[in-house]
Length: 534
Image (tube, rainbow, N blue to C red; front, top):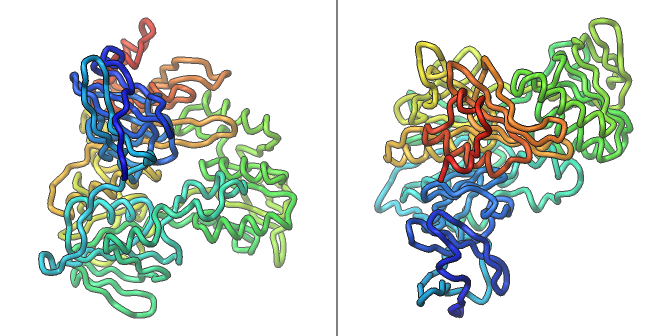
């Protein structure tokens, strides 16, 4: 590949602590000045292509404004998911007051991190990952990044390569994303890194005392270390008619394809559950032209996560899209013989429909586990290294982990374990678990984060607050542009935000560094969050 030296800016234009997107032939690059050292990197996040210049620079960490992937500002190396690839990096020289970058003829969009390959002469161990979702896929890559040269086997009960599950109820369900977009990696990627994929294999038992995995076909597999990353199973309602064939769930790619097929022969659908998957699906189904009603026992969507004010605003945004709500209603039964024809509430009201989509949460998929006691909710207790027992690790929806951000164990029991069901958190945990499987002893220091597409805007959430004593609102809910700070024990435990992406990226790093402003500071004169990270 041929390169040429290109003058891209003046030194005086990029001060220490600055980052700036520069247009060059064939695209854009990002210039970053860290303590007088200028780096030239890819300008766009390798996850969904956000402009990183609109994110936040904290120390030597660049935080993406959309989904808060983190990159090293000096090298472009990947620090935090949901990105899987690093940023391209280009050589920089300073010639007088000119910043000169050596650029290729064609700019790359991303850089696959350096990884080891299988070498049984150096390492005869076998590490098995049960589950090929967010946590499992991240762990497989991270093991190779960390130099593990033993055998890696990733098991999935599905027939597909690991894929982008959050897309299922959004662009894919709307018909705007083709199936080719969904795989996280190509088959060639796994082959080239000697990551063995065992697809369409259902695990029925993991015996940690004998280190044996048993499959549905009675085949067995021995391991040296195992990561359990089996995610969740959609909840079903325990009411008459809930097992009828047109009462469906949405968790897998097959579920999404079946739902899309069913929509071709339906005009009315009831979504049961005002959850993230419930409401995101409701919006997508409305875009497909269906008459959509959301039914749920809660009186305000997301009141337990965001509070009633924000929940009411979110509900109104769906109403404006023509989606109807039946809230505060307990489901009594689905009426029908071979197919459900109506949903019946406890008060006797009912809604007729052609399809019924359950979005009432998931339960941890751990029924296969032997030799370790699970928690009452089915989750697996892990320590700060995501270790559940000797040579056994767990990550993702099934892991109950200590929250290092908890400030006082006497006041907050979350140090004893919290469980979070979100894609990016699962990827973080998969990476952390893999580091420790590889022998690095890396304690969890990640900050939980999730995002959700709500009709015409995105809402982002940093931190974790099961409950709170106060919400300090900065902004305007009517315009859907705000930050909401959730306060407990005199500290900020979580922040929800919309249309304040750069500040949310900064908040991610402030939480990680334990430098969040106090509630008194937030109640006082308006704060510039971005100034706090400089």
